[in-house]
Image 1 (cartoon, helix red, strand yellow):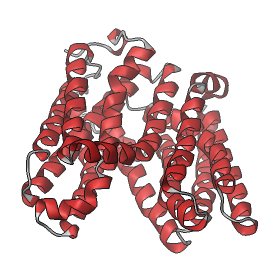
Image 2 (cartoon, one colour):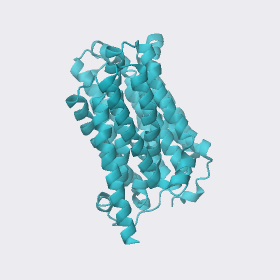
Image 3 (cartoon, one colour):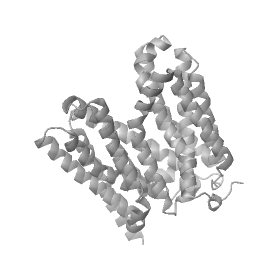
Image 4 (cartoon, rainbow, N blue to C red):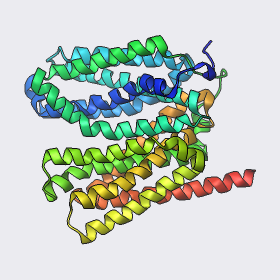
Length: 398
C-alpha cells in the first residue's frame, strides 16, 4: 500500500532538489539540442525535414504522453512511473549519443520524450498529493513555472558550449548523466504519495466537467502562453529590429526569467495573503496592464530593450502570481485521480498555448509586440470572467 501524503517528510528545500531536476530535464532536452540542429542532417545522413521531425515529435509526445502516464500513475503510483520514465529518458539519451542512424535517432527521440512525459506527470501529481493544502505548494509551482521560462534562455547556450568543446554526442551524454543522477536520488528518497483510487471510479468525466478545473487551467495557459509568445517574437523584435547582438539579447531575455524566480521567492507570502483566486486575479490583471503598456510602446516608440524588456518584467510578475496557484486550483477536487487531472491540465493548456499563441504570432506580425498584446488581451480577460463566474457559482452553492 502506498504511504499517505503526510509521510512525505521532506523540507521544502529538499523537495525542490528532489523534484526540480525532472522538470528541468524535460524542458532542457528540447532546448539544449537546438544549436546542433543545422548540423544533424549531415551527421545522420538525412534531410532537414527528418531532423525537424525530432523536434516536433518530442513536443507532441511530451504533451500527449501525459494522457497515458497520468492514469497509470493513479493506478500504479507516482514512484514507479517517475523512476521508469526517468530511466527511459536516461537510457535513450545515452543511446542517441552513440547512433548515426536517422531512423533509430528519431525512434529514440520519441522514447526520450515519453520518458520525460512520465517523469513530469509523476512529479506534478506528487506535488498535488503532498502540497495541495499547504502554502509551500505555491513556491514549488512558481519555481517550476520559472524553470520553464528560464531553461529556453540558457539551454541553447549550454548546448552550443558543450558541442563546441566536446562534440555533439556530449549533449546527449550530459542529459543521460544528469537523468541517472536524478533517478538515483529519487530511488533512495522519493516516497509513494498516491491515494488509492476506488475500483471503477470515473476519472475524465468529473475533471472535464469541473468549472474550477477549466478556470485555473485557462489561467495557466494564459500565463505560460504569454511567455511562449514572448519567446517566439522577442528575437525578431530585439535582434532584427532593435539591433541587439545575440549575446546582449540572451542576457536581456534571461532577466525576465530572473524576475520570475525572484518573485517566486515571495509566492508563499502572497498566496497566504490573497488566497488562490485572489492571486490568479492579480496575475491576470498584471497581464492586462502589461499588454496595455506593450501596446503603447509598439504604437508610439521604437523597439528597444527598454520598451520590450521592462514591460515584460511587469508581465513576468503576473505570470508567477498565476502559475503559483493554477495547479492547486485546477486539481484541488481530484486527490484520488491527481495523475489523470495533471495530464489533462498540461494537455489542455498546451493545446491552448500552441494554437492560440501560434495564431497570434502568424496573424499579428511576429516581428512586433502585437502578438503579445493580442494574446494577453484575449486570454487574461477570459480568465478573469471565468474566475468571476466561478466565484458566483460557489457563492450560490454556499
